[in-house]
Length: 212
Image 1 (cartoon, rainbow, N blue to C red):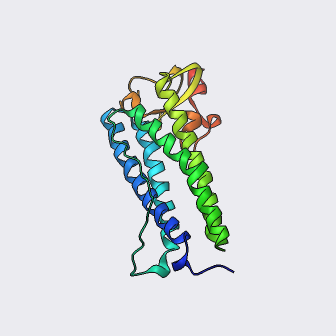
Image 2: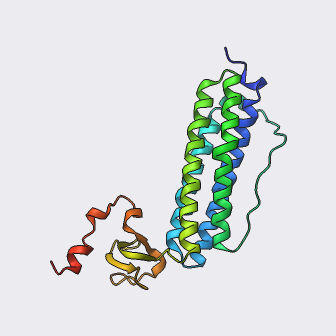
Image 3: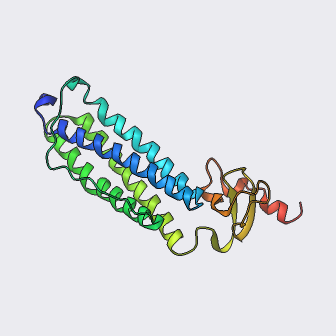
């Protein structure tokens, strides 16, 4: 039998999680703006997507606090990162580290506490969102390495590229400096396997290159 939420440690952990997700959303929104300043639209979309998902994580946690309506929750021993770097690679690395900590440590611990206090459903949410945070970490890690190794717009072998502005596709070892169709900069190109709602098999660029 679960204890009363108002008397639990879980209520504090829910508020910590809500605060953490809310801050993450803002940090990633700021990072997305930085990416656009650097003409890296594809990196902006990575931060935008993650910010959107963090907003919904915050909503999940906040809804469990409904019975605390009108009250205040004091939170002690909560640590939140300060990531104000103007360097895009540093922002990606910071995001990777923060998401890893949430996914592998913080939310696992919160889930364990919720289980001990009898809040099985809340524990399940913490565990599920922990898995999502680990996926976020892997996504940030992937793009961090692409950017660091100079492979964000270059491939060792020919591959498909899509312009995220107009959808134009091309098969090449490098993304075009500018989109031939809409003239958007190289920063709008992404590998076909990473293009939203698209697979490499859908790419018409191979047929076009073969003159079909």
